[in-house]
Image 1 (cartoon, one colour):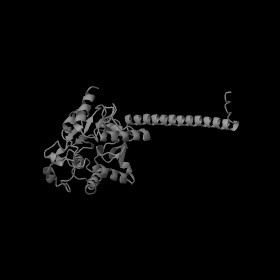
Image 2 (spheres, helix red, strand yellow):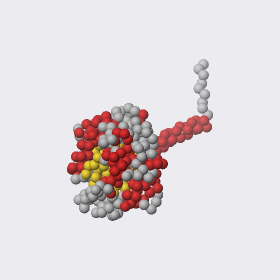
Image 3 (cartoon, one colour):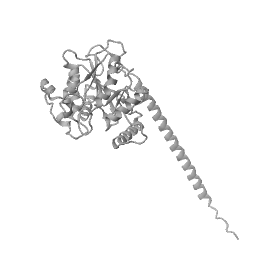
Image 4 (tube, one colour):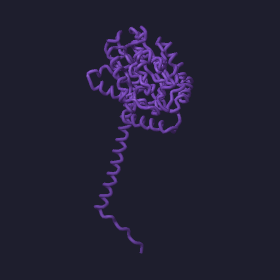
Length: 336
């Protein structure tokens, strides 16, 4: 005779049914939580993208008493005797020529000055200017401070009201966006609003692109930043110069003190979007690391790191073969 199947006791059946319903409820709760998190992330991302396109609260309207604006950069391969001041294995050689055309056209369109300050890297300039503490061990990136101070305060009577500093590894991508949309209202250097405007990437404040206003406060701020070189400067062979770490420390002190209102912080996409290749898989360890940090940042805050059409410029921060990447991006922008 066939064996009769053993009946599961009623209490066990109830327990199994309850466990099944609990698993279903848990799965539903997890799915709903994931959906809520995704919706929150989407809403945050949409708000962040809107902030990228929206002028900051302090900005004025284009056409109001326009300030004199200069675009300033330099490169360790772009000026007389500059090649001796390499900031490490990641050379900027050749990048200045690649970005010059885009910024020159932008300057002509909006009546800005477009200045190559690579001469501040030369021993002759440092000697003529008696630049205190301009030691030969400093990476080229530190000299951006001297270049901007010259444009703001010591340019032979041709000082500018605002300077956009941009590292040489940048390309202007959207010439239709005037810088005035990022600047405070007012006609003079002593008016309200921030005097130093910067953005943050996944690792904090970035010294590659920023705006500085001609004022006594800015002069003191830049002088203090320059004075931090002995503590933060790195030696030859390092791909970083240390100026960015110094700026982070200085901004942390400033934002925690009485002068916090002098610093304006914009979304990175406003004027400092980063480059990443169009390849599905990262081609280098550095690119993989940057992509991973960008994804984590997006999941955490909804903020975008990399360039999207419509952004003002593209910054090739952390890219090893900068010249090749800039040529590739310039060709892509030309097709738009």
